Length: 296
Image (spheres, rainbow, N blue to C red):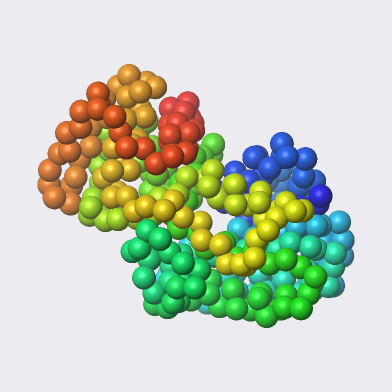
């Protein structure tokens, strides 16, 4: 099966390239860096529609991970429209005119009016208040319209806070909360939380995302709803995620990691002998990042 992964230089895209290689897919990639992998490259940015259609000749499925993040969208909304809306729309149109059978689009749970619930429903009300979520929701609508009545199975994955262990020193990979906490633990032997440590987020181990992707790519799946929420099913405080990192570090490397809560000007003392309430699948992601940052 020919599989195109866009945004292959990003945290999720690069992890998918590495993980899905072992599943027998004939991987192709799209990225701003043409020399990123020794794999077939498809130029999504500079290709016109006709050239892009020809490039997709041997592609059966597309996983669209490319896009600008919240901060970059806020700083440059014009470019955000170009990257987060125009490019995916062009690819969807090209896919419709080629042999593509499946199109997986990475959206965000921020399109929901209320993301504080741990049990989001795909029929929950959508409401956007920023450029990032507006661009994602707009793209959902556009590609749904472009692919309507086509032979392509469209899956819109609305991602919460995906916790993905890294094997890259890229600054963009370290911007996620989990990898920043792991970086601090590995490089500084301490963790400092400058934001409100009691803020709740839905932290989702990468393994949950991967399982859903493999299910979507399967020839025999029974997925009826094209909207799929990628969620852990629970909300976790940022300080509790830091405790998970501290717990894993102590378990595998034998060193106590102190956690400082600058927001409250206080120190979080943690008994490492007690069992840490790890989110299922999170230990592997934490260990992956810790191992990388300790070696690099």
